[in-house]
Length: 303
Length: 259
Image 1 (tube, rainbow over the protein chains, first blue to last red):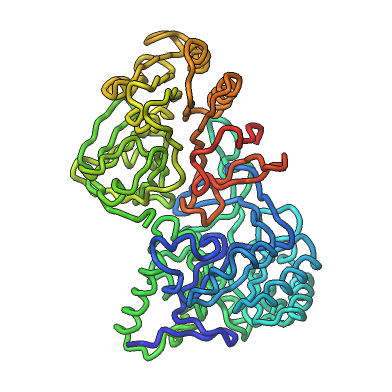
Image 2 (image 1 turned 180 degrees about the horizontal axis):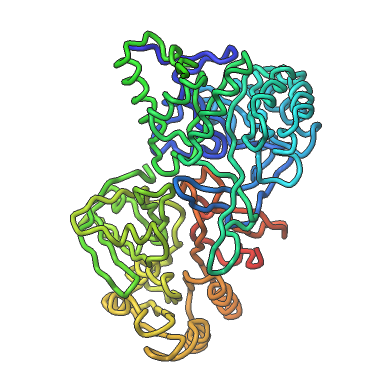
């Protein structure tokens, strides 16, 4: 049987399938279906320095082959995350990644210091949330600010640091290079693509925030292309995400250059999506007679 | 186990109006766990998001759950095309349901339109001690009155245009019912504007009131924060609370109606 383990920036994952931030709560919400320990890793819902209430509802709209969300980083704040949620997840045998967001550079630094002191396997720096007015994606759209915030956070982060990139830029490869220059140990991509849906009867946007972030199968080819671009541009590992709902999608993402994948909104359609992907990946790797799943990473043969 | 995913068999389909369907689904695990006011998250295979639908009835011995839904969009239209004998996949039972008092207490149920179905399991619990007030736009939209009567419940039917029952709003009927006789609890589900008024009438009569909120949902299990609604905190502030996890049933005093 092919070895399913992957090592990303020194962090061991028992398989390359990780639950994406914002779709898997604090790792225990799906416990009635299966334990989080079945997964390679869990990225927690974004945490910020202070509590955030998020945006008013509706926050969810369905789209062709996907969905928009405008949750807006609702969370109880990093202190409650560390006290109430992190210890429960730490008891599970699974790599734990904290997703850190903020209003300002100081917020990011302070929040990262707290979660990395509390003990997580990795921090995912969220400079790509499209649903907040200040901070979030605004840090992730220029090379200068990406390098600066990555360096500032790197200085206080005691564990490997992964920067989550927004696709809402002209060149995601340039942004990835800036993250690498700032000291990122890995990058993850893509966050959601900004989008809008309108109720034609009321002439109102369906989301109260007017716009939101698109995820789901609709974004898969965009994400695969961007992972490929970034793979060619940087030498740090990539965790690929965006529209993965089957093992075939995960293989595509790995062939493009991802060392591991995150599965997000597919879990809403089928709570067992990640489990089926893990089993499917194993079967695929065995059928291809791979000794390790890592052999897929970047192995696309471009024309 | 509190909930699970179960692929059941669609045992019975009844079309109640032009746009409203009743499904009785053989799903013994979910039926065994179900409580009044909880919901199931229905997989609509061609679509990304599941549809959250309140449980309109459950029979633990027969192993069935009933849902009653209105065709509002593509997902519910896909559901309506399912036939008896087809498979249907549900997550459930999800959320926190209605708190129930002893069945000898007096309960008033106020359902507006497609908010009426979740009143049914409560009606069964209280039987002849319940009054079910139901409101619809017009006679052709009226559903479930015989079902309520079968539980021995006193029914009060209202339509906006007076084509069935009495002309007028459920909230006026509630005022009359609570003025005529004491009640111990009020339960409601329907349009937000109606529930807000129901809560105000119940409060004026000093009767506890529980409401079932509806919101667009993502995960259904508290993981995505997609379905949050505005609620009041104990210190007088407001917060955003997940309808799927902490609701869908709330004490009416918790809801910030301006949110």
